[in-house]
Image 1 (cartoon, rainbow, N blue to C red):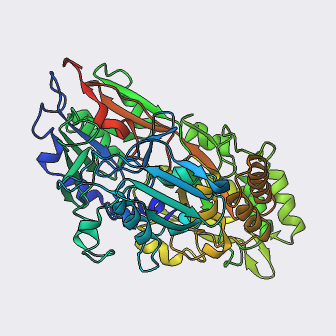
Image 2: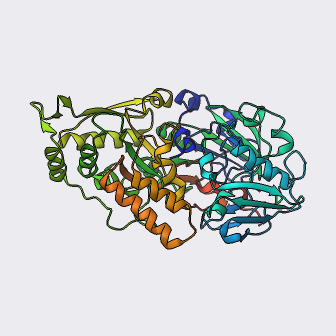
Image 3: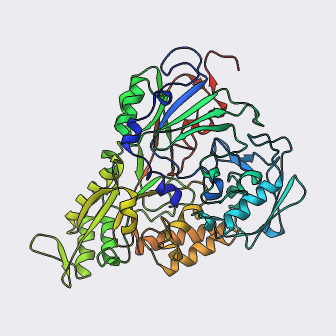
Amino acid sequence: MTARSIRGAAATTLAGALALTAAACSNPGGTAAGAGGPKDSAVVGIAYEPETLSPLLGYGKDGNSKIFDGLLAFDGDMKLKPALALKLPHIGDGGLTYTYTLRDDVTFSDGVPFTAKDVVFTYRTILDPKTNNPSRTELDALKSVEAVGDDTVVFRLKYPYAPFAERTVHAIAPEHVAAKQDVNTGAFTTEPIGTGPYVLSDWSKGEKLSFKANPTYWNGAPRVKKFTMAIIKDDDVRATRLRAGDLDAAILPPNLAAGFENDKAKKTYAAKTYDYRTVTLPTHDTVTGDTAVRRALDVAVDRQAMVDKILEGAGKPAYGPVPTDSEWFAKGTERRHDLAGARKILDEAGWKPGPDGIRVKNGVRATFPLWYLSGDKLRQDHALAYASDAKKAGIEIKTQGGTWEVIEPRMKTDAVLAGGGSPGDPDFDQYLLLKSTLGGDGFNNMAWYDDKAVDKALEDGRRTNDAVKRHAAYSTVQRELVKNPGYTFLTHIDHLYVVNDGWNGLSTQIEPHDHGLASGPWWNVEAWIPKDTKK
């Protein structure tokens, strides 16, 4: 799980959401939300807020940034298509060279032409150790990037990295602006200039991000002229605002989305995801660092009950970062709910029930704290259910809510109800989640997981283009997690969105954990067509 995917929820407050201005709660410059007629603006309610809007610091690394484009983009089926590049890359030298030919009709929103030097600047800056980009490891394979004239870029790799083309959906920054500033603190981090379909018009932190259509966008000016993302952390508040007409759309948990089923003016969109909820089990804690405890918790938890009761069926059990319906899932790694088996594992490891039922070993009680993000009801519900299941096996878990500022300093020894997940390639999520050398690196490897067999398999999977070898490597990772689970994976969660039925062209993609900003039915808002208007 990346810093981006975990930190997304950190900056938002309910107070900020309630302070959302009237300009953000109606369709600025267009027909008011809920009113009839064509809509040339939209306001959507999301839960998370980015820390930065600079691609150099990780924003837009997975595409759909609204403000920027990558060389490539994902279509509705998550297939790569050209964006700033004229076509898909030419791959040569046994997978070590990727050559891109660029469009010559693209300008940044300030009117300056886009060229190969902007691509080179973006990737070289990300790789610079002085740049505070938490996802730099994702480009570990990149040896060099060079411009050949204004319209050609050549990437050279240190080793064959099968999903490299998917890394080039990364947003491209303008050298003529960003190179003149401090990469980590300059104005570009909050006042971006890009080539994308929208231009940022306002960012009121904790409240909203407002965009206006880029009239010179190379792929055609969007029909939705103004687009506002209202940052509303609290699920209930988002639902209330949607019902009141303050919002045109919102992401909602299943129980709240169900309240709109009979509203004929709205449609519900469900997106399949890689988004999981997991409990980190830090190796530096006496209790969670015991492999027997981790194995016992892995089978004591009732995942299906969580899907049925917490998610109301909108999801599936998770046994690792890979969803069970993915081609990369290792069959046979499913863990059935087995409370008797959990108790047996603990008995054999010397964790004996104490007078109050909580197990003890060498004077140490089987108890530990579990933190969840305050205000996130899904995480809280998962944490409480997990603690309830654990207690039946004789393990006491004390759940506590807090902000990331409170939680992050405790992650080395305290368990956390975390989220993560990235579609595409298994390297994208598993390397950052499990690689031992990334323990303590921000929100990467939050459990400080350290397993030599997993480390080797992660490197094997990363450093070959051979599909058979890669499947074998990631199968090994998943099977090792059964023997030595550094996390207890709980559920994979479907994302539900309720949207006013005022536009044509809406759809969803397979989504990552980092939902709401770049995902949802507004992943392609630039292609929406207001109803009752000519195409």
